[in-house]
Amino acid sequence: MATVCKHLIAVLVLLGVCVGGARYTPDWDSLDTRPLPLWYDGTKVGVFIHWGVFSVPAFRSEWFWWDWQGAKYNDCIEFMKANYPPGFTYPDFGPKFTASRFDANKWAEVLDKSGAGYVVLTSKHHEGYTMWPSAHSWNWNAMDVGPHRDLVGELANAVRNKTAMFFGLYHSLFEWFNPLYLGDKANKFHTQNFVREKTLPELYEIVNRYKPDIIWSDGDWEAPDSYWNSTQFLAWLYNDSPVKDTVLTNDRWGSGDMCKHGGYFTCSDRYNPGVLQKHKWENAMTLDQKSWGYRRDTDLSDVLTIQELIATLAETVSCGGNLLVNIGPTSDGTIPPVFEERLLQMGQWLGVNADAIYDSKPWHYQNDTHTPGVWYTAKKISMVTIVYAFTQKLPESGYLYLGAPIPGDPSFCQVTLQGTVYTFPWTTGPQGGMNITVSNVTNATPYSWGWVFSLYGLKNQ
Image (cartoon, rainbow, N blue to C red):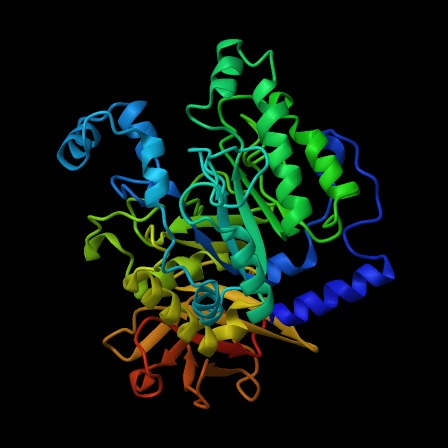
């Protein structure tokens, strides 16, 4: 499916009818008129990867440096006393970030099998360490300290050579303890030394070097976009960059911009509104419910089950969003087995239920009017609209009552189950809707993570 999207974009670019063409001025009135690249809505699912020096202490979360020396949480202080010698600094973790077992091709294989259409890697988190050999992060990058490798480049090449996925980069605008940033902050952001010397040069560098399909911006909340020069950068990105026709951006470009300006909206971490949104949005969420980065003390109970992941996916897509599923690799470059298992399970489920997810659209109803936990999507094929009903519970009665669908002519109205050739009997419910016989569903599918019924011939299709 992602391959088809890429081919379609290539054709549209040649025809001059892709998202490019117009010239955008560096203001939100202009920038917000840019249409989203065609590929994004159809893919529906992505994988987020939080990986960096914070993966070495692997304690509390990817915010460990701030929690230890900024917020000064007692558990972080005690962790350092118990495990590291006096005087040990956060930069001392850098050489321990070895990525010694990182195999970009193996990662690409797992990502491809997840069923996701795109991947977003942290090129730089708030700690300031760049995962590529940046000319603007001297002695605090993956080539100078730690792996002595271009981690961004390796994964970008593997994803593009081994999969049909789109490749995106997360980039933090700010850095907790960078003296230039702290100086601008002390000046109430009336100076822009950090932006001039660090933020913007890095952004231009990753765009020109890696040509990402997504720029996933973050770290914006302490200063307005006028400090970050965000609109100037985005105008260049949309007008003159090597990815001007295909690149996608999010909404984290300055304090107050989130959920208002930019490309698609993220609105908050783990944003899942449960209702249809007017603007395209993304639910960036974590398999480990307590952290985005790897934690050494993760319990199995902290990790979403595959049933919980599928439920979140169904709800998100039903309400018009994309799901960005985050994993946190270890410092040596290993994807923890439980995360790999969840990605592979998701891919198995998506392989069966692809029609209900990829290129689908929200239906008239997002969730059912009678039965809780049932979510809907729809897709028009030729002149026929198919409505998909997601459920994770099969009633003990053997009958699933759906209040939202209005059945049409019984000769044409039909219920099937994704991944099978079975047709399921139905009757009109006492108050309308459809009462579907589902007693033999568990015998028809190899899993019990959630089922998708295809409804044909509805009056309200």
